[in-house]
Length: 113
Length: 112
Image (cartoon, rainbow over all chains, first blue to last red; front, side):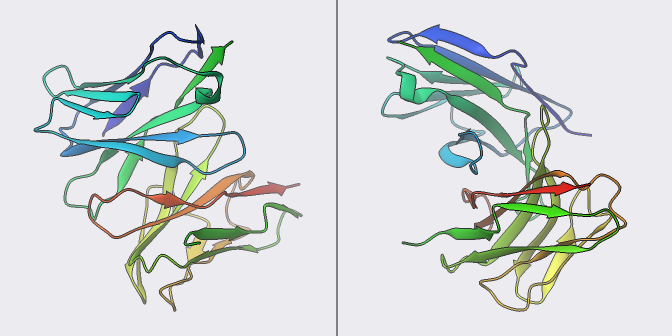
């Protein structure tokens, strides 16, 4: 069955540095991958979508890469700010199943001033 | 503002009671989803519906039921058959296909 692994340990970084979060998957080749942000007690909020034929996608201070050979996506936040502190989730599509997504367990990011 | 409303935010029930969680959207989305989130685990899909009057089981449907009588509404019933119902429940919707999910802010259910 499909499996997704994100950094299980929380990531603590200093304000201004680049945060890099990892999403690895096995047993499957998704057509696309999505990243979400979740704050405590709230629902996830969509950030970026990257397709299998795209190597990289950017949105303001966010960058996502997708390496289908390594079966890995990296999520970068440049010039990080304390307001970026949250849990970040990656999600993969399930092919031919109506857009169903499989979610990773999330990585908690803490940016210290 | 368009969005998804889940109510209530916190819900407490005694073991053996059924409970229904509300989810309403005004985004005019065809597809709606129910996920369950437990500490340290990814979101797990309970049920989803791609069109009114039709729905499919997700990965952990046992002990749950849903209905989709209106496009805007997708209530979830947690039955007494659900062995471990205490969790954070999230409702989502999208336009279908690979479009991003829009989530509500969840209902935290505690069963004692």
